[in-house]
Image 1 (cartoon, rainbow, N blue to C red):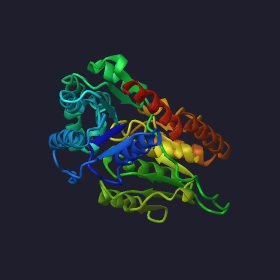
Image 2 (cartoon, rainbow, N blue to C red; image 1 turned 30 degrees about the vertical axis):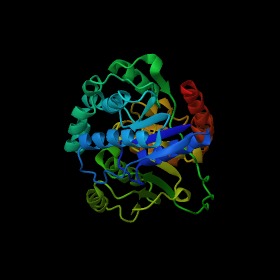
Image 3 (tube, rainbow, N blue to C red; image 1 turned 90 degrees about the vertical axis):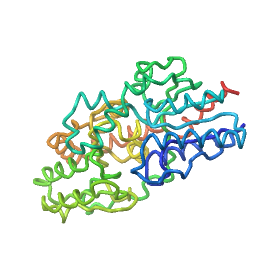
Image 4 (cartoon, helix red, strand yellow; image 1 turned 135 degrees about the horizontal axis):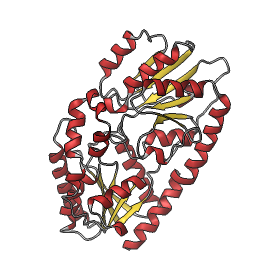
Length: 365
């Protein structure tokens, strides 16, 4: 059978959404489906309007389905606020499945408005566009609506989606290799960050927390691995201003897992990234201890001092304390590493996730 896999997102190999879409394609092929690529290179400009991207996504999916006569349309959308795209496709085609990458943002911003100050335009636009109000205009006509987390499930029900049409399947990660080598005993301890440099990622908070941590631990490094997208100049200025040039490195490159001892992902909010961030799952699978923030959805997989450490969001003191805790306790690091790998194998391994998709798609054939 043929599945048309189409996505709202810009074609961009450095984005987590793009990486997750490619993993999904591998899963569908693994369980025996012929996958028709539906990632249109129609939108390559980050500044292009959301609505235009939505129109492109809908039109491309319809055109491809008619051309290739796909049996199932599998549509990847950012959040339930964009479910109207699937509604339009469902008027012409019967077997439509939707996967939502992330949650809505309006409620979370209302509960913690101070994060808006880090990037007012970014957060204000998402407050209005990516909202429960927008989601409630959809009829959720697709056969199934796939989410990663229980929070997203509850959110969909609140927006008006029928509960029996919601399926919870975590996003998968295919680990190409484990951490290849052990660091030498005399190597400096190194924290790592990987991702864009936009305000929502909390890199500025990480640098400030590291400056605080480093006052008592001067022989420790922080490596930032980034695509370069976001506030690169502001991050460089902050590193210079805090006199951290000798200890903080900014690399516009893919992450070097072998060089870091602990991953730090200090998200301001849970939206603006995949529901379960790809880098967070990779850290678990590779046995790299992780510090992240106690925001919704992430707290479904990270339990403090069990599968990672949880700092309070937008709190440099809390983050610095967690960095000190994991730095000073090698036994805790090892325990977190082992529990993380076990969790990954049980829930997020690509073979586990593939079985869930196979079970779901069998209902349509």
